[in-house]
Amino acid sequence: MLKTVAEHTVRKLAQQTSARLQKKFLNWENINTIALVVEDSEKISKHQLDALCEQFNKHCDVFYLELASKKPSYSDWFCFTKKDKNVLGLPKKKTILPLKAKRYDVLINTSNQSILFSAALSASIHSTCVCSSTEKFGHSNLIVTRAKNQTLGAYLQDVQRYLKMINPN
Image (cartoon, rainbow, N blue to C red; front, top):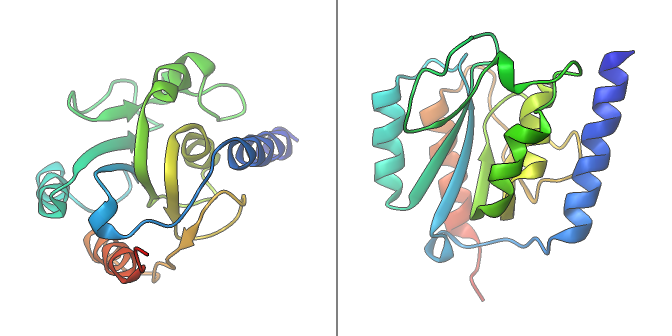
């Protein structure tokens, strides 16, 4: 029952966000800021992910989901722990409120869309273009399917390749 309520809440949040913001596709050259949503289950080190973000040559904020942890692991990333989620498993309002002031050109949600926290977080962060691996809640502009055993680094390179293919005109 709680999962059904949480899914309905996320779907409603995604619809409100889509109606409020004008979303469009952006070419890689026109992107200056990236919001990257990553789960702690990814088999990638902080150093590897920081290096990958540096290769993008864009301002990149990492939103790191470690929802089973009591304390955040990294001080230079936006880390979300169990204290940041409510009884439905969604982000608390006080967690999301400071993020609403930020604007990103592109948001890349690499986490599993069945994790409702990541879907709600993605719908709450203001971005011009939203990329994800599935379209479960209807708020993504660009769907780049992720292979079952594909590493995070390879997936992010695929997303970058597709964003470079978009015609800027």
